[in-house]
Length: 152
Image 1 (spheres, rainbow, N blue to C red):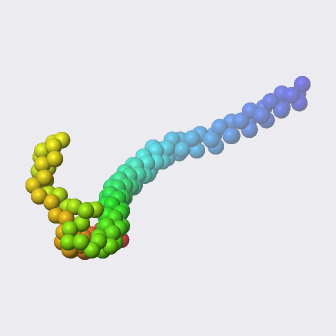
Image 2: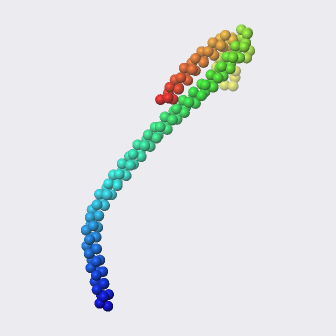
Image 3: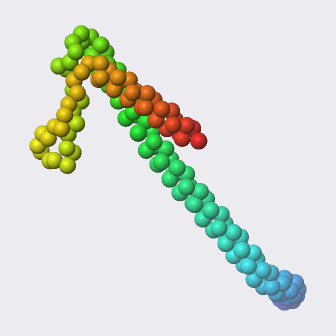
């Protein structure tokens, strides 16, 4: 029984020493926690600012991508038109007549709905070939401009 009492006293002494040692550490940790919390808050704030900056950059890149996609769609339409003009030109060159019966450029009143309000039309082969040549030149210039914008 004396040994048990002695063991209990030893355990109490060890526990008291541990409590004395832990008490200053606990007090010290309590003082450090607000600093750590402030540091964490500052770091979180900094990271939030970084996230906001990255989101703005991403939005700007998406806007630029949408603009380039629109430009590319326009370029594709121009390329398709060039292909069609080449086909029309080839067919017109096969014509030997003063006026062609296969193509005609019509000028009409665009405001008139559902009615064919032709003001006049052109079916002269030579004029149509010149018009196709002019249109191809202008379209090629626009395609080159669009390609320059796409490469930026």
